[in-house]
Image (cartoon, rainbow over the protein chains, first blue to last red):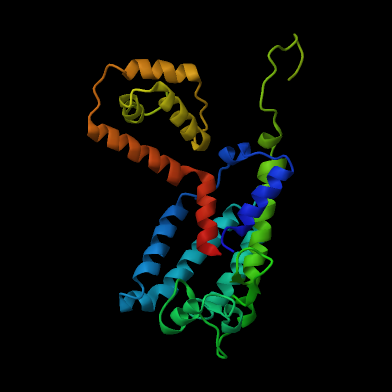
Length: 198
Length: 87
């Protein structure tokens, strides 16, 4: 469900006759930090099985990444939808932080996915996921909700993911439909009568 | 003009002002400075740089600057990264 909320929101935004103009006006405080965090996270994904030490500390690094993300969302909470995104991320963060920095995944729910995924999850470190077991705390906040047909992409998601995607939906709808720049007419009138306001 | 010289020189070497224009619009769309460049601005700038030799090195630097601007400073892409990291 990584980009589903974004894609669905764009489709709905265009159906509502919105546009992308306000996206160019978007200004997020500290937004530049995310390309860097992305590089860090992808590097850990690739190397955590090769270097034992990195595998051991990866959970702590994910926690730091989430703390930075939460701070960023809090600083930008004046944007519509960001409070919901903040709550969704916090729910994911909560279940991860009390389970060693990794998101628990229900094997029952994961049965809808490729069996190879379950095998990898059992035998090694996969992304920031771990198996949900009887010793997992707050397991209901983990990836426990299977989504399959008729939804086009089979996947398992968490309650936090759903809340986060609702927030993303509202944020993009605001940008595409309600933002003053989006509402502004694209073309300036060719001639303006004297004294007449635009 | 606000377009960095290295950037415009790199594209000027391609010898097609319409590429410069298209690319400039492409950059402007996500430019944090939100500058609006007109077609005339770009023509003027292209004329300023068209007689200067451009080394392959400058061209490469220009492209790196362009990619850096586009992938690291477009705020909405940062939002994309945020979602990918935190979901």
